[in-house]
Image (cartoon, rainbow, N blue to C red):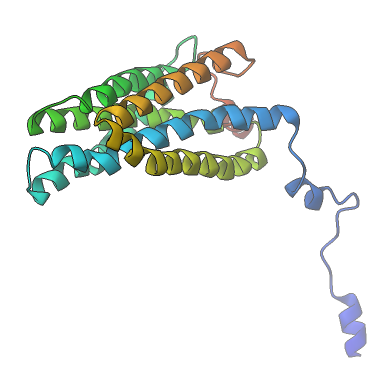
Length: 238
């Protein structure tokens, strides 16, 4: 009788074509790989810039004070900026509508002043000036970074590709951080401004290339276009 009961127990129906199992591990198309590579470009440059400042700012400040508390406040201003600027910039970029979308204006408006602040930090000659320069860099960094991160769901067509993007972004961040840690100390030993100037040059070049590529490609950057988010909302309404 027990065998009869077991035979009558309903089982989950296997998909006939096995598409659900195959889709999770499918190979990305060349266009999807290209898009992930393009999107990861600013991550490397931003990680390089923020790591250079966070790591070597203390060395600059130590020339003008021996107070670890003051140095900690200057370096810790990054955390203060991170509490509120990304929220404001991200929400504003959600509502902004321009011919190049709502995200790129924030990336450009943040990256260019952040580049200038990076260059200036290496040439400052007072603790107050270093603190102001560092605060300016952190503020503009977060103005650029949060809207840039929002480009991922905007420009990726599926949740599966978006999941792959996390690993791509992690690798790009690791490259930028590693380059800053390995090369920053060497550049600092050559000249005090050098790591900041090099990081600024990389940031400006990469962001400029990124914007140029996006504007020249068929990516949905137009006003009112928010990619997968917009398509998801449209499907929910229908």
